[in-house]
Length: 88
Image (cartoon, rainbow, N blue to C red; front, side, top):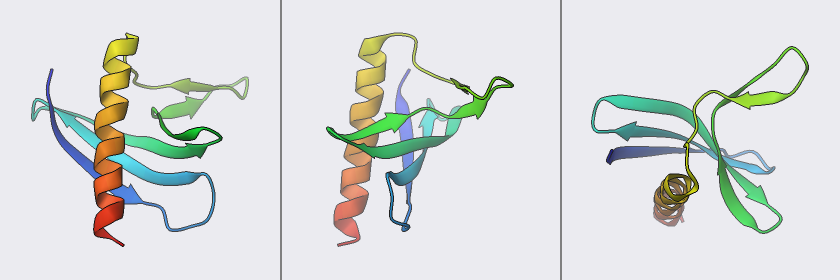
């Protein structure tokens, strides 16, 4: 599966949430609302989630293995850094 498009929508408000991302795979499957969050050790991605009846959050879509998750995160953060540099 190949990432064919990444669109970054920066969040202007102060806080940990830095951007929302839409990512397209093979020009035929899209995932909206991947979040870029500023954590204690840097930025990371959070997959789209929904709140359960118990009040916990559960991912709606997510990578199955750590290698793909790392590749996905690297691609998204690279696009985020490029978008941030263009808006300087």
